[in-house]
Image 1 (cartoon, rainbow, N blue to C red):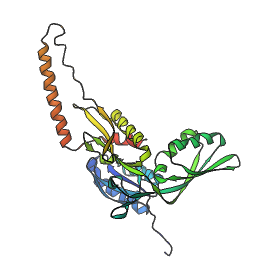
Image 2: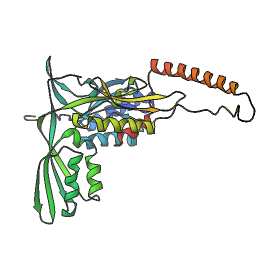
Image 3: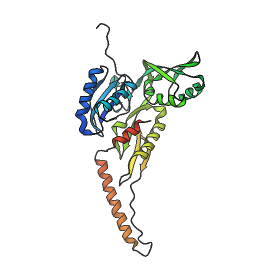
Length: 311
């Protein structure tokens, strides 16, 4: 048909089956969804942590959430997803290129641009101040306010990467659920961003790689390692949780090893040397376990990935 254009995805998310044996079921489910949703695009993907999956392209965050919900309800396929990301235009020494997934973002570049969105928020006047305070967390630009009957219309520009984060949740929270918003894609705008990687036992966890503004680097890095420390199960060896960007460690937490009581030797006349022998043997065992963990692939339980997605 003349004038028809294929829908172009703007949000990119990787899907992996929670049960790795259900890869074929996930593939078939996505193919069936594609029959009724021409905007859905996907291709094969592989993660060293989560195994085989698919990279999906979506028209927006709502499109992605509906797809994930349909996979669960209609096809009984539970999935683990990466952080939603957008396509950046990056200028390196090899020229301009479009980067759709965080793990492909170059460590060094000359210039980068990110997609912008025009957003409109309709809210009661009493919540105007609280919504404008969201500028502390989101990169709102060119803010305008207009009175419409008994409500206020807020117009602004916002990076699409911020929009697909938790903006809707924050709006509902500060407006008691009364604020509503809509958006449309705008142009690209120059930005200063960096790739943030999470390392567990000195290994990068690909599914947790994100592209964030440099000004938010330390805050986001600290938040991620602290959250992982709370969520990860303890092992028989200590686990270093690190956030790295630009070739340096930005934040670090250490998850202590599980402790095992060795008795009360020496407390009531027993032989204390026996306890020390047991302790040294335990330390040697923990060292071997840690070396094996460093040499093998890190496995993070799928439920932890789901918790991390809930910002």
